[in-house]
Image 1 (cartoon, helix red, strand yellow):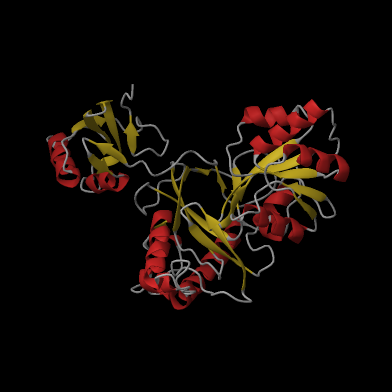
Image 2 (cartoon, one colour; image 1 turned 90 degrees about the vertical axis):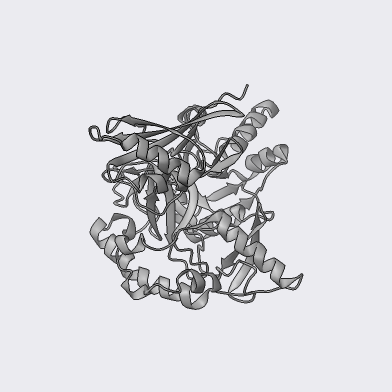
Length: 423
């Protein structure tokens, strides 16, 4: 097992939680004061009173589509002129200049700022956990064009004390040649591209003896692919990061879930809501970052995961998540109308007897049937009929209700299951 990157990773969990909660009110006050978006979103919030997770859970969740909508609205208001305060939808606390080194674009387009803080996206911790050490050369094949992925990894590698070859994407034969000539200690990029490089090297008759480790992101990394790389002498690990938030969690040598980064506060909420789920239940990852430049508060990632019990065998004491388990946005169209997870939760909240629920859409397209399966302890007279009425009131659609025993619904984060035939 590798040693920890710093003392933060091995501090007692209670000490970490106290430090995060102590930093939270100041970050909220800063966001409210310095960013246009949070001046609006937190206008009625007493930031000094948000000192624990229960209070944090009362704040609104901002999802990516809302951030994008604010950016689009700002561009329309600017009418072609550069409006520095609005170009990031009002979420950045800085404008262009010495405090902002670069601006990046993600599909949408969505624009993200890069601040001047060393290891701005906090990637060094994940790179270290993947086995990289100061003084090594890293072959970085994340894109340097438009998106921040290449810079995210490069700034982390530099903070760790590594040298970086900016390979970027494409040009597979040149990638092989650079690896042969420079002898990097490892690779950072997507697993699929490294597989292509390794296969191309074999095709070219080139051996890459120095390539012993890798850190992946941006794609799924199943055990079968991990074993494929191990069979070729490459020990690979994965991380979970986004352009908005930076590092969220990372894999360790224990290979038991992903350990949360030290610079974020993570909640798991019921999809379509901001309500935290019970420990171990699958839900949407909602992240609050302590980044002062881009202070995203309760940012909904749209990704599903769940907390793991206990601590990592590597000695790191932070909470672990299971990793990426699918997408939280399960909005589906039924008989020409959209049904959202939030609507299902709005129905459930009307009935204290219901523990959990899952809306199953079945049949064939244009001949849909909705069934809301609800977990109830025992039987309650007339409950199904009352829930059916609520479904029609909230969704404007008729739906059947099936009452099922407690614990019978899958713990997979699905609020809406589309089980229709698309043949």
